[in-house]
Image (tube, one colour):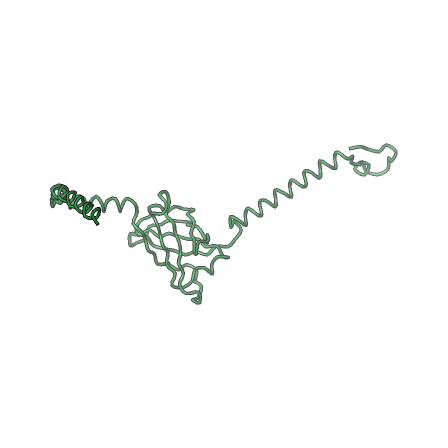
Length: 196
């Protein structure tokens, strides 16, 4: 900042002139502020921070793999997130889903939610499959019907129960006696195929 000593009239602020460096620094600071503001606005729009949200619910038997912040999709498009998990009077878990206002049209009357716990080990995939495209949009606060896939633990317990039941009936011991005969049969089939 330079002051001009030739002009002594008026307030000192009127005597200040800016040199080239000070103008470049001011322009740099101003452009950085504009760039950061633009990035915050664009990021907020991509993350749906400023968008109104519509609340829907679904009741599940187990909250395994469902956490706050899980993405909710419809037709492969992210339409919302899980915002809360609460226990209901019927001993079910009520999952609160916040759907972005702009994606509300994907959820129509007759919609069903699918909770797939086998597609990803760490978290469940939640997809809403809507009814007819001509059906009205689902109203705010509606409970959406749910189809749940069993978890990996449930499948392993089922397999363990089958093996245990087979062991109780000595099916495994019977298989051990049948195996040598089965090997001979397969060998005979190979010989017949080789002769043909």
